[in-house]
Length: 284
Image 1: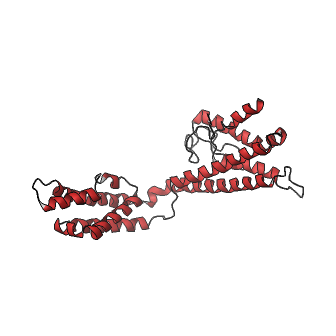
Image 2: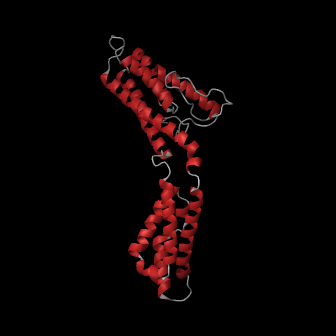
Image 3: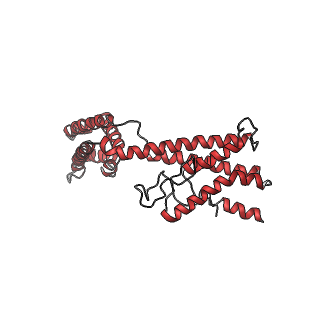
């Protein structure tokens, strides 16, 4: 009966950051590895392997989060001038779409109206907003694709509708767009990459916890030793969530919260992207 209560508690761990997970995993690793010529305190080769994989996953997650935070602060400087060419690309695309729409909306029954409608359906079925609202790199690529289709699949229609000037203008602006983007840092980390790395780290971390329960279900003393740093971090995370509603930045070496002062410069801002403050393994 008591085991069921403990397992219920396990399934309600709060979602920690990479720093919190690394602290707990490193403590576990120390118990699973030989120290100063002495045999490991706990001999479990498979669990040791899983802990090392989780450490590697969360080390990568922490590094990506670090790069993401730094580049986010530097982005306005690196992207100086990109907004201006982005606005011109938006206008050039809108002018092309309007030229096509003028033919598509023609009141007369004319072959050009049919061509305009085909182009509109193929290239602008939802207008230009779906393209102009994209992030810079994605918009640049989308315009490249549109230009390619105009030249490859709709050259006859483009000539008949007199679109060449609009196409030439859009191509010139987008070429400048490409040049500006090429001058930016190309190995930038995306938020999606950081989120995915964090999820991989979480999966590896909780796989270790479940393995500890599996291997030491009937050995509460050993289980308690391995889960003590996990429980410690969970208590820190719970307390921090209660105050701030975001995950705390944890020093992976000491297990301490890094920005304990509420008035600190980073107060209220997640140190690392986390999906939400809900229990990480809530099975209810």
